[in-house]
Image 1 (tube, one colour):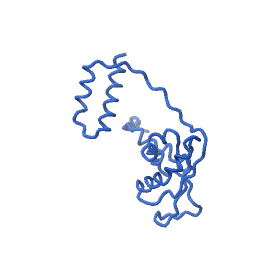
Image 2 (image 1 turned 30 degrees about the horizontal axis):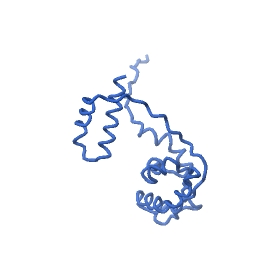
Image 3 (image 1 turned 45 degrees about the vertical axis):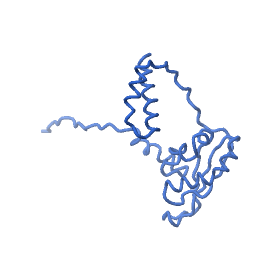
Image 4 (image 1 turned 60 degrees about the vertical axis):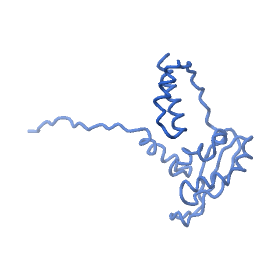
Length: 170
């Protein structure tokens, strides 16, 4: 006689989006030469805010027969889609951008940048219009972020606080 067993209950674990993205995007990024998406993710920090709004890396092209050892490998060519008006700016900044990428990775990853002129694919979403906060809410947000030493982080937290508080007041 067969014994009936209770259905197995697997414990479900909540995962963050950051944990799921490499698996989902890994093959697509690897097909364009981006084994990890660090150049894509950090493009605003690498190129600067203004240039990053007008350009985006599209492919990292490794030379044929690339060696597996990073120290012996010839550097790659970074192909960047850039709006026509900013192509010259990208060319003038290319050595600085290359140095920033190579410094971040710790080895000579990129040797040159090849700009491709044309419209970039991403569109800026329309910013949400929030009502101005009353002075009490502004003071509360300032008090909560007063202990943060990093000014950029404090400003980001204040913007977040304003957005959350403003969205709750609708």
